[in-house]
Image (cartoon, rainbow, N blue to C red):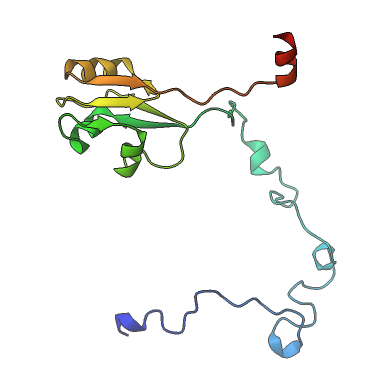
Amino acid sequence: MNINEVNRGVSKNRRRKRIGRGVGSGTGKTAARGHKGQGSRRGSSSHPVFQGGTMPLVRRVAKRGFNNKFAPEVAVVNVGQLEAAFVDGDDVNVEVLVEKNLARGHFDQLKVLGEGELTKKLSIAAHRFSKTAVEKIEKAGGTIAVLPGKKPVVKNKMRVKQQA
């Protein structure tokens, strides 16, 4: 076998199984559902976590904590990464970091952390800065600019307008 023969005859998408189309197909008669029982009836489906009467794993495992779906997603960049990616005197902002692939994925805010060393004079704009990051940036002679975050959602806008 040669390397160019590895995928020969393999189609990208597997054709769907045509069930209940005669004995010769291999999935005729009972249409791969077996004889009798709940699973053979039409409209039958089991719960996705059903384990045959055993207490399901999702109910056995202890529940802990709380996941706030409204919390802002924060991307993190260290000053050591900025040192490696930028030259002295550069302007660093969210768009440039996304372009250079330092801030990846979907995020609402950008935070600069103090991991690593910084010797270059950079002007950095981000939503948040750690104390050590601020110290290292200012020690290197750089400047920081705090960007505004998303505006909070105002509940009952009409009530707020009437009271004002």
